[in-house]
Image (cartoon, rainbow, N blue to C red; front, side, top):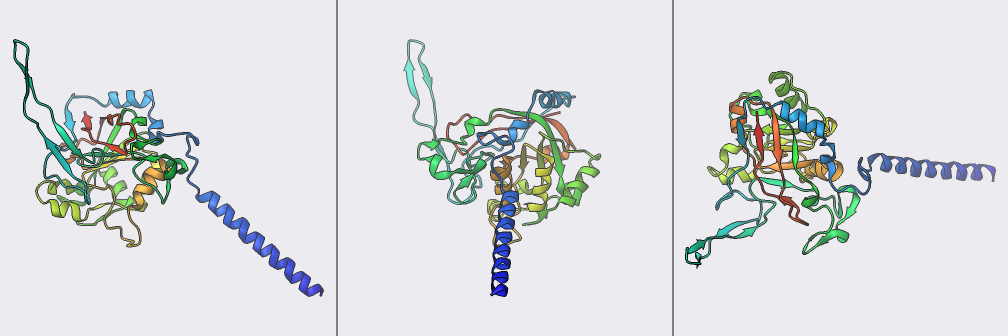
Length: 316
């Protein structure tokens, strides 16, 4: 009888220990609330301070401006069934004796998710859960997101850093589905003068993949070189605000682990509030070896939208 009771007690203690371990592991892996509190809706842009703006301004030496945004036009590469359409109705007017006439446009498309596109915090989730643990059933409405809309972001003015991975590897462009590693990033930064990434920076990666934009759309959209989870975790550790790249999805596609789909998006946007800016122009910065610069981008204040178009700029 004593042995049975002893075995039962040991069994119960074992079960309790397993439960405690599971609870501890779940707590350790929990990604919400965010480091800015449970009510935060802005994510990593909370790292942008007046000091970061002044730091960016101090990098302007020549006043040369680089436009990083692609032209929005018919025929651009798009993901899946997204589309772009712009039409000009017949001329309106004339009005008044001075015969004022005008044109305007009708646009149709996923305005925040085509061309040069900014991924907001409402764009990507892990199942039903989005940034800060918000459940999509509570905020995703047909008329727009009632939480995590892109109107919460505000202007992004900070230090920008270019990492020319293609240049570091000595190629015009990285290969299809090449996974950029942490070693690649650190090696490129060292080659570029041992540049350091600091909290609040915006980082731009040059893969050379932009070569195929509007020249070979099928190849551009089929796969892409990009960062993997190891490199993604590196950027999380550096506490960046946003990662930008000359490809359509920031990360390597398809993922080397065929069971995963866009895990870096989840790591950045959902778990850490870090933004993506995709389909940008990097060739000019890379060719001019402009590795540090003032960066500016202001998402359109589209209430309830998942993202924004725009034309980011770099100034040296």
